[in-house]
Image (cartoon, rainbow, N blue to C red):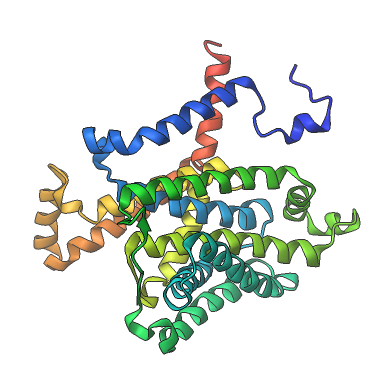
Length: 353
């Protein structure tokens, strides 16, 4: 029987030697992934797509800390994403900050806004909190759009970054982003096992019971927003350099909804589920944009669009397929990808019985 006899057994990063070994093998796989992609064109991937997936995974982990572990909903994370992106670029462009200093500052600026946004969470719940966070996201992008300091509607060009005197390429960004992502994943896993993480979970399960047990709702609710915004701000700063150009129009409502969908599809209350959800949703989003190029299915959809829709309607089919996939995942596996993983693991543990 797997019984914990010591508190330190519960807060260990690796619960068993098996998990430790698999984690090391996975890190080795990540280290050689760019080579595999370049040589074998793995699943039609590119280093750029993997970079984008990793950045979205950081956002999904931060949002899951808020939604999955604390039970607070947010539909304004595109606003934190924009704050992180524009703050990082401005610090480097205007004040010549190195990236390794600009990124944490951008994260803390986003965190400060998250703390402020967390104050309404003390009095709002459910759809009311969703509307409040939605309004925040729309307000941030509107303000950025109308201030020349942030480049106005035209946005900002991310400065070139150099490594040993040569401009950084996607492969260099890959290793930089992956190191940051691994550190932030470890941070999230450890956070949930601390007193703070237990307070978050207690608030999610029952804020009244948590308060009766001595959990300070004011402190921990605002803290969860701040931590979530910090993760999103860091991801926003990395996102700016992946694209090379940021525009306020890019940080729209659909982006916030997509971030929330990554968390739900991956699995609420699961760090690994957040990563899986971000990987699946980002990959599908990119590949479905070129749905007409898919063998057999693509020409049929183009023919359908020409016959029953305008030719421009082919782009909307990608959105429809994307939405149907999300509906099917949530409908048949409410716990998301992580729930599917739990069921698969349980099946093989009890096989053949």
